[in-house]
Length: 572
Image (cartoon, rainbow, N blue to C red; front, side):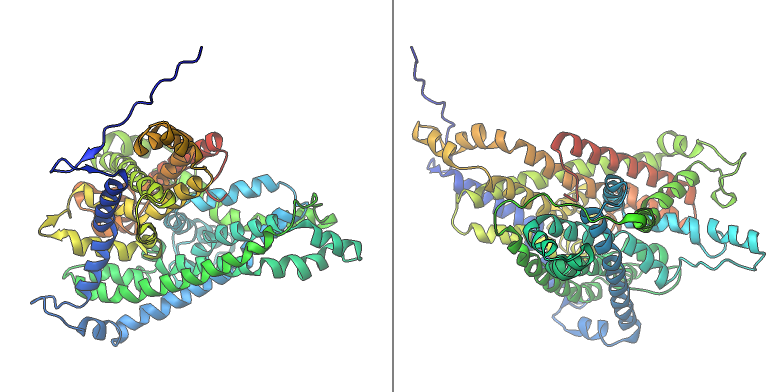
């Protein structure tokens, strides 16, 4: 005999006057306070600081006039545009054919190529820059030394400390954007179109250029825009390669504004156009990706037969391996060998190999010990905060718990259009002065990380919530369960895989974030990325390589766990 039991009710939250508050109102208030603290105040202070004088704090437009009329500040803007255009063009020219080879042809080892693209995606480009310093520094790079030894020339042909060197390195790590967009577009295209063309006599090349390529063009343009924006907002690689070359870009010039004497007001004004350019191009990119919805028209496509490359299979594989070779294989090998060398300049020769630097990093050096611990602690805390805020707002928006949920979603996604270096300046402006002074504490880094990657967690949570019907929650409520009780006992367990995925997708980039940390850290709150920056500036490349290997081993282990337990990788 079935016995009906009344569901346990969660006590309602009450206000100070004892009046019950609706769960939606509680979520709205908490979310609004969190977003105001994380997003609205830093961006508001950024704008406010840009129109202040440094001495009296009065209103002025002089910061904008100085920032955009002096040639010393205009040259970095020109360099940034050249850098971003070059990076985006090369990334598209490599990424689109690579995606086509992997998705549509019988090129060998397609799984290996995809794995290497994932490895490039999760590798910070500033670590790639460090590796290429070891390989292609003008006088001490291993490639140049080998060239001099073989040819007896006075110097080697490569100079990584140049605008061309920065374009090359950054392009290699932006290839995954175009690869991801284009391979996704090719996989989603209905096979019937190409099958019909094949029946009419079109060969594989004709089908590619007349059908696949035109339909994938929005994805190619989207990849170009994303690479352009990433290059425009990147700090690490230009700092390592262009500051020594005295060829500044926008992000390195912003960094120089914070050197003694600090000019925060001028930096805020100089950063504002970068914010608006990023927002505008991201809007265009979203529109371009949105046009790919045509790929969903029709029923399930027939099985697609790979295009046979014939005798060109292995030459095509060799070409396809070029980008992973430059972004993963050679850099990882260079960092590993340098980390195992007493002196990296001598090279990986017998008598110079040692495990000293790993013992030094983990046991002998308090600075690296603290930095490693801080990186994991701050990343863990930032991922947890971002997940809690994203889940609360995601539930409020998708379940329509509060009016105006679309505004909460808009504010939650706002950091997506804010480059990390601009966001850091906003946090510095907002929280380095009373009444709330966070600068110099771990909290300013934690909250900056959580804010920077909040859109990732929010997108993940809302996508998962969109696939979960509210019928189960409604059924529980008809049996007497409160809204909060139905959410915690029904929705949250079903949402657990998406929440874990969102947490990991925030933790991974927070672990190696540099653009925010370089403006907000102090010696007491240094993390691995900032210690790498300091060691590189001091020329201690063995320590740089060791910390770089530690970061990459941790990152790849987390990505492997994500793929194993969630069945997905960061580029899927």
